Amino acid sequence: MKKVCIDPGHGGRDPGATGPAGTQEKTINLAVAKAVATLLSEAVEVKLTRTTDVALGPDRDNDLRARADIANKYGADCFVSIHANAATAKTAHGFEVYTTPGVTRADALATCIINRLQKISPTLALRADWSDGDADKEKPFTVLMKTKMPAVLVELGFISNANEERLLRTPGFQSVCAYAIAQGIADFLGVRLHSGEPAPAPAATPAAAGTPIGGEPQATVAQAQTWARSRGATSHFVELAELYWELAPAVGVRPEVAYAQFGKETAFGRFGGVINESYCNPCGLKTTIGGSNSDPDAHQRFPNWRAGIHAHLDHLALYAGLPGYPKALSQTPDPRHFVYLAGNARTVEALGGRWAPSPEYGLSLVKDYLTPLLATVAVARLDETVRLVGDGLSLEDVLTALGGLGQVRWDKEARTVTIERG
Ligand SMILES: [Zn+2]
Image (cartoon, rainbow, N blue to C red):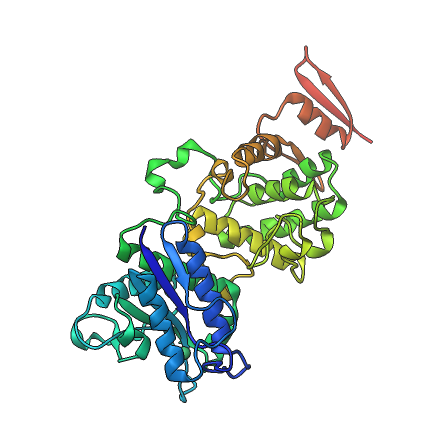
């Protein structure tokens, strides 16, 4: 098995750089490094130079040498030191990957990580030095000079820039960076990481094989509300259908798919699980950090239903890989808008085993919720007009609807319907 040494920069009495809001670099470095190690551990052996907030030597030089020593003694195949940047210019931004000067075996490792970071976070700018033919920058950092294996130092972004400081503190952004770095290392070592890998290309599973998540609405609000009432939904659940039909078109998700899922996830607004209505969370979305299904604190609390429903729709759109997704993290209320989820489930059926652990989850959503919703006949009365909407309308449905206008008599022989207004 290949061995990787990950080095969370600074620690203990040395906080590294400090951001305008007081964020200490050592904390960000450790969080990202631990996440990288977790992701890599399924395919390689991993050692962290530190796992807690400690310095590794009595002074700066000894601290840096100790990190290189750990990697050398471990016999690592590669070494990645993780840092966040700082500059006096408050506008400096973007990420950098360093190697030692000259052509080295680390150049390929740097390129793998840069490619993954660029692919996964197009919003983060690459600060490249192309003068020597590749994008990495070069500096004789002690940890890079003293390590014997290919070694790079990643600067995740500028903690001295207020915007990037905020981003670096976001667990979602930390996960995205960690994922990219781990994938870059895996690419360099020629190993494959499976967790969070996107599902096979959609070409292999044509959309016709399932129920699409994206697309135009195929049911009206009135249909959805009639269906919800027939399932004993709370009046608030019935009301919230309007928000789904208002917000879904801009996202590109079919509102009836999301609303059916809302019904499944919350027992039609009755909740009764680990969270209640005050979370304004229609689909059990967890926080960025996540946690146990039975832990209420692992679940996201939204400020209002508009935000919660928007997050639900964005999360579905992300899974479905709809145009415009993934969004920039600052553009969505979805706390788990992880890039690696993009296109993970293009049909409702494919949500099984992905959105929820049960492989039957998506099938049940279609069979027990969406199909009955679509088959619901809704009656909307508009002054003198009666409009019936729904698949499989029967004569009985028509007569029941007309009955609302008065006394209906159907004479089959004469082939007439008479309505006496009540
Ligand atoms: Zn640093």
